[in-house]
Image (cartoon, rainbow, N blue to C red; front, side, top):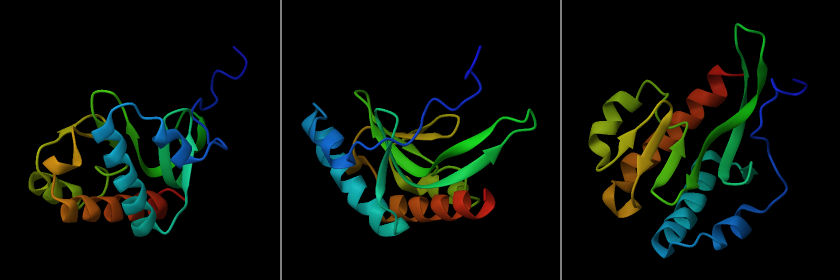
Length: 141
């Protein structure tokens, strides 16, 4: 199939603030704006929408053994209906020590799931953001 090996999640021109303003759940929307400020401040990057629902900060280039390659957000989040999904925060070596200190969360393949920011320690979350961003942008150039 033509184009089937291309990454379907790409940067868009939609302003992150515009997307976040339309998040229906009020707590999820408020938490998303807190994450927008926090990740921007800690990474020094401007937010970029990746696909229709992921807010990313920075990017990295990947190349698989299969030959497939592309770009992805370094760290970011998506305010999903069930929880906040945070990307790039579990990959740094420090994450293993920081995650037990974070508070109520779940982890997936490469994602961190938080029901609401009030459930986690903001200092630990900030350390995870910084460590993840450093890891993704330094290792994957």
